[in-house]
Image (cartoon, rainbow, N blue to C red; front, side, top):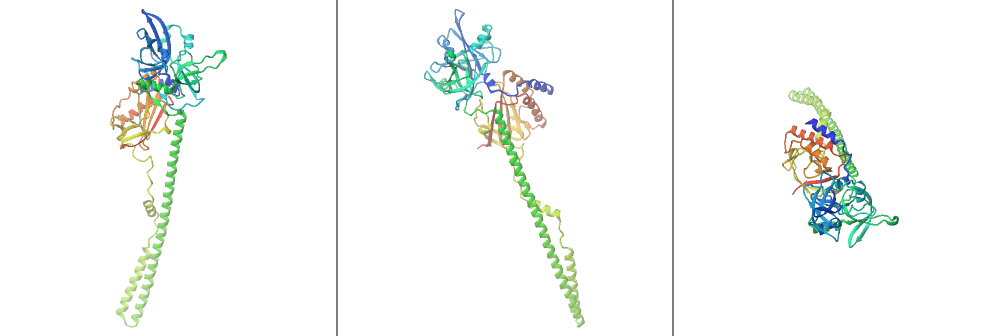
Length: 508
């Protein structure tokens, strides 16, 4: 199995160094073809562009499917994905000629939906159009079959030139190069979010500069609401993943520096406290020795006086009193010798032990604690400053963190340094998610890679090698999971499309 993982990882090594947001959005762009039939013969053909707002629904211009709306029994709508091997038939479910928007449903294939950007667009901001310009098709198509063969859309770049009103509909004016056939395709920001639907171009007679008109996101959102179609909407500003990761590294570096400084300060305080305790112990010892010496001297003097007094009593014939005085004096002098000999000496080791016992207890840092311990139910909220959001919702995430990386009682995470990690490769999406949790800081991170259909197929092949599906305390099984996930991780692009960072707290 290890050889298989290595071979597949090498296969993935040919992937580009980063995941491109525009390329990711292009996988949800389609060619919309209309074919008019009469007596089983083709009497009319047209095409435009569109983009997915749900896995089985796309938006396009109403004028692209105008004949299908007028003659539903005689006009067939074809949806040609940008990836795959075939096209599918679509069905018109909503049309708004005033806004020039239409919604088409289809089956058999699933597309990655695009997100709508709901934030402000600045004058001069760089924009990208995706679609199937007819002049390119006329130059490259060799037969009618080329119009229904899956092909990646054409990308063109330009700038935002302001908002206008076109026939009572709010539109965005831009300079991204589009042509007939781009109608219904998305106008995107640099992060691949839809800010408008291309619908018309200005005439460029006599050398006039050409401009494109795109139906504004507000009009698109209103149309989708009226059609009962939900759609992903993102208001976060567009930031590069490189700058976001650099900011994250800077934040980690600042946190590490602060922890190191706090550790140094604590160590210095403890060292100073120990030195002071040792000095205090030395001074206390000296005072005690002086007291012992003073007592010994006093006993010696009193004893000597008693012995001398006994001698005088003996000369006066008071033998009994002389004996008692002499014996008492001798005892005092002996006691003086004992006190002198028993005076305490200075013991550095004992002083050091006493200093350690009295030194301040270090305050636990944010990284302390057992990473394998259970934490319990957590409510995790998005941290906008640390996140890069392009297409995902940012709703709160509920976690129940159990012991040894068991999440919600059913999913086993693998050890990844001080963190725990799990890679998800779903069947119904073109997204690989790297989920990580740091028990020390209670930070939950979802790093998302939006991949092509081919790359997803290869990632799913790697996923099949992962055997540990449920929570386990088996160290060997968890180590095998970590190894298998490393193979998937090595196969991913160097940079992701999204990074969602959540701060978690104990759930009420």
